[in-house]
Image (cartoon, rainbow, N blue to C red; front, top):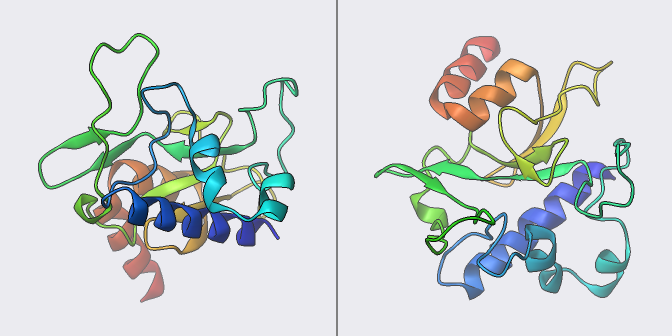
Length: 173
């Protein structure tokens, strides 16, 4: 069930990307809309009314905060030019410079969203304690694959996907 949630969020982002000139959904836009609100129109009515944005294995420390759902969206992605920020902070003076999906490098090993203790996903707030006896977290990669990853693997999927690729190949072989 949880894996299907991630797949549906991937499809919603693909639809968002298609309608927005190839740009991926930002984690938070210039109008302070978070990714859940931005992807919601691309989900059917039943999905929007369900808890698709909530990880059923996550217990929020603040249930009143609707943005703490246990699923976070990545906020920095590597493109051929540089690291691109995919979020607007409240104090930002510069407008959002959205990231084009086709410019994200190593999409098969780059984490797009996943188990997190916040609405955004960084190496500091990812959660790899919800699966496999508390040793792995669930993450959605840019190619649409959903994977259970250890802390080390998830960290690489955010910071250095080429090392995750090498690690994956060495464990397969």
